[in-house]
Image (cartoon, rainbow, N blue to C red; front, side, top):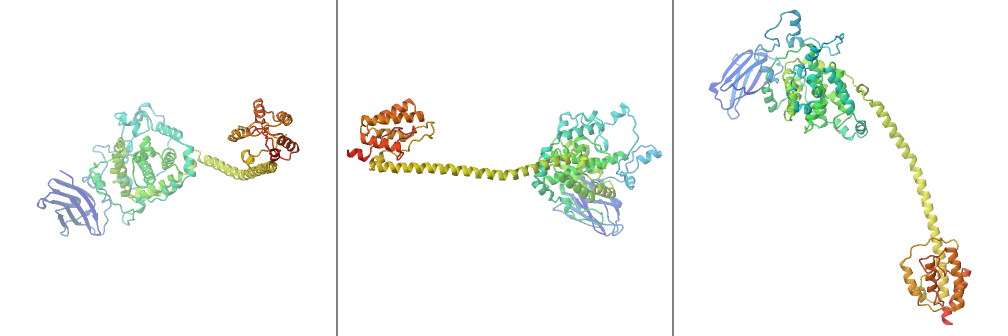
Length: 593
């Protein structure tokens, strides 16, 4: 037999049942209605439901069949008009046969102690649950008992799973040897791994450069957009066709959980929902290839097979892992995830179930994260449909009242932030102090530049005066064009020779055209050359070149130049080796003579 696709809805007077049975004939339909039992048969389909309320067959029922869609719709009146049937979206729970809702084993001890510890789950859910840490006197545990404690999974009901999956072990969980590690050892190893993975630089970078994180905090997840419903005290949640199909595929089962295991199951559920809330906000509702890693990495339950004993332990573990592993390591993201999880729990078990189905899909599409579905998520999807809504509301109120501060994480965040703030303030003060100094340096540099500019301008002016005097002595423009003006030598000139320029070769070529000087002029010029050589330390090669270059000027020109050189009326001798140091310029008077 095939279980058909179906869904249920209601109005104040009727229960509406939609059953998809394509390629069937209406003549073969068979219905059975009796109180909370409903059965439908149309070969090869068979559907049996255990309803949360009573329905009657009194002639008011109506049915129709859409042949094109293969959809059979049945409206059955309620026994009590106006009654609200709770949990119509929990399809897996509705498929349970009558009498199978009890978690009692087929064989049990009818003692008072046993009947209290292995009673009906729903009866035990009626009482208030204490979320505080239960304190017990320490008892020495034997090795045999320690071996028996190496259990994990939903309600600590699994063991030996990873012994058969050694290759996938490191890709799924962080525990090295889950089969031989106690819960206390796993917790200690988790704390050490978190302390080692914490990066102060990454944390401070997200703390001071939080523009992107502020955008994530403004994101509105899908559960915040749900409209509340008065009947169920939660929110109106709709499931997709894929989610409904997955609910029908789940095998309905009962879970034998004592009080301790039930408490751990609730706390682990909060831990998983916290990781899911963070991932949903950090990706803005769009899962990516990192989503399976993020969910299982932030959940101590999924990553370290942790079994928590209090709600505060769950919050501290989640806060530490958020600041150690994901991309956005900001405490505001921790607070936002806690608020989101409280909102999910407050919206009812239908909202929680939808979140679990989303996690189941993310893990199902990732290899080897699907192992976590077998260990936790599938059992949660089935178990959550059987719990009372009151328990969900109480847990949501407890989570809203819970307080988590940075000091609870034991990562020295306050000291780290204070040190970073002091460093930032010192850098700002240093920058403000170096600002005026820089301006003073620039002003002094500009004054130095202006003084050097004035010196150079003075030199240019003196050089121009020398050039003007030389031009008046020459009395003609032809020799001025052939020979550039030359400054007068002084005792303060720098003795360091400079590299010759292209002007030297042109001047040396043009000096060869000057007339030959007289013998007296040569002696006078020789004395001047020796004096300049002593002051400027002219090299032997430069002196020889200068001697060869003064072989042509006339007697009158040499006398005039010597007189002007001694009286400093004109600049006729160039001390720089770039030009001929003993260059003789012929004047117009010498040419007339």
